[in-house]
Structure formats: C-alpha cells, structure tokens
Image (cartoon, rainbow, N blue to C red):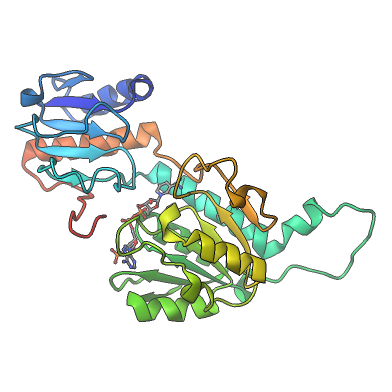
Amino acid sequence: MPNILFAARPERWTLYEPHLREALAEAGLAHAVLTTEADPSEVDYIVYAPNGPVTDFTPYTRLKAVLNLWAGVEDVVGNDTLKAPLARMVDYGLTEGMVEWVTGHTLRHHLGMDAHIHGQDGVWRAGIVPPLARDRTVAILGLGALGSGCAAALAGLGFHVTGWSRTPKQIEGVRTEHGPDGLQDILKSAEIVTLLLPDTPATENTLNADTLSLMPRGAVILNPGRGALIDDDALLAALDSGGIGHATLDTFRIEPLPADHPFWAHPKVTVTPHIASETRVESAARVIVENIRRGEAGQPFLHLVDRTLGY
Ligand code: NDP
C-alpha cells in the first residue's frame, strides 16, 4: 500500500485531492494512502511543489520518487538531500495553454495588432496589410514538451519555423539546429524568438549582448521560459538602441517583478505575470498517478530529470 505525501501549499490540496483520488481509483490504487502529513520514514512518494512543507528529504528514508507538480525543476533539482528519482511535470493541459499563449503573442507581433489597438486616432491608414505567416521566420529555443508543441502549432499556421535544442531533434515542418553554433544560425534569421528552455547553468543568459546582436533589427522576443535565460541589462540596451523591437516577458529573475523594475515602464516591453500556462489539475493528477502506478509495478518512471544536466 503506497503512502503518498502531498507536499505543496495547503490551498493546492483542496484542488488536487479529488482528482488524485479519482485517478488513483482508476489506476487500481484506491487503497493508497494520500495525505498532507505523514511519518517521513513511511512515505513512498512525495508530490512536490516549491514553497511547500518539505525542504529536507533526509528523513524520507524509503522514498521511491519525488513527483514535481511543475515543468520547471530549478527549485528542487540542486537539493542535495534528495537521493530518490525526480520526475517533472509533462501535462497536456500545460502544453495546450503554452501553445495558445505563444501563438497569441506571436500573432500580435506578426500582424502588428498594437498599431490598431493603440492607434484609433481618426486617421484611415489604408494599404498596410499584414504579411503572411509563410513570409515570417519564427524561432523556438528549447524543443521539449512545450517548445515542440509551440513549434508544431506555428508551423501549422504557415510560419517558417526554426528551433534549437541541446541534442538533435526532428519535428515535421520545423528546421532544427542544436549546440552553440546552431544557436547563432537560428538567431540570425529569427524575427520572433520564443524561449522555452529550462533554467540551468548552461542556459543562463542564452540571450546576451552578443547573441541579441545576431538577431535581425527590430526582432521580437517572447520569454515564457525563465527570467535567467536573458541578460536583463543587455535586453534593455538592445531595446533602447532599436536592435530589438519588443520583448513580451512572462518570467523574471525576481518574481513578482519589483514595482520599480525598468521593464514595467519600458514602452517596448510587455510584462505578463507568469501566466503563460500552468499545470492543469485534472490532467496533472493523472500524470502523477501514472508515475505512482509505474513505481508500484516496477516499471520505469516517466519524465525523469537528469540531475547533472538540471532538467
Ligand atoms: P523540456 O525539458 O521538455 O525541454 C527543454 C528543452 O530545452 C529541450 O529541447 C532541451 O534540449 C532544451 N535545452 C536544455 N538545455 C539546453 C541547452 N544547454 N542548450 C540548448 N537547448 C537546451 O521542458 P518543457 O518544454 O516541459 O519546459 C520548458 C520550460 O518552460 C520549463 O523548464 C519552464 O522553465 C518553462 N515553463 C514556463 C511556464 C510559464 O507559465 N511561464 C509554464 C511551464 C513551464 P534536448 O531536447 O536536447 O534535451
């Protein structure tokens, strides 16, 4: 009988409990003990989110796995007290939400919507028709669960889509590159760049003064990935010089973004408060329970994190 500790903020328990119980019953694990408090030495699985009650995993001596509620694991991956396998969240609801956010913000810039939303001044500016998607190159940095979904959706709309990852990838309708040289190649042609990389030592400041300068003048950046992927000062300088035309930022080095941060007031920055997407309770509960089922059946866990790579 597996003991499952739900170690996240209490309000999440109210949301998750019924869906976890339903999924456990569907998986034939209705007898599992699902709780928010347990003797650490008797816990088999921890359902984990940052800022919850567990920071030291040492007392959890029979832990079979930690199942992260979020896609990003930067808050737990470096925890030396964690010896058990760590799985991250790959949830189709989370992916759907991200695809919609990235598609929406890409279309905003592609179609030049701001000119009409902010420009109702009585002047009839005829003749400026938006280009077709097939004449626009958009790049996705990070071709994992989220990035590959966004790349496929944008390719489906007709965009010329390029993508970059650590290891080689093949996605239908997407030109892919990998490694440091591949990044330079991708950025040189990218008119709209979306960052969906994880926050790791290797990805910090992926966009910096050097890489920003490779992009076509006036290119747009969308960052629903993580704040640390961009050198903030280099981005502000590139926006001020016109090298970069606009940045729509959903993630920041410090969240909430401090009220006096220059991003808030910058005319070429759109701030969204880390809402690009989120784990969806119903589908995520099934992902969590599938991994518990696998653990109990002696099968390999899904979505395991490589602790040395940090994602
Ligand atoms: P995955 O782990 O599935 O994908 C990560 C991608 O990044 C992979 O393609 C990987 O390459 C690539 N990558 C990692 N390191 C490097 C590197 N050094 N150089 C080049 N490419 C690299 O993650 P997800 O797609 O599930 O999520 C991506 C991120 O999105 C999360 O880590 C999180 O930070 C963010 N996120 C943001 C949300 C929001 O609301 N703003 C919501 C959810 C997630 P490879 O394929 O070769 O391994």
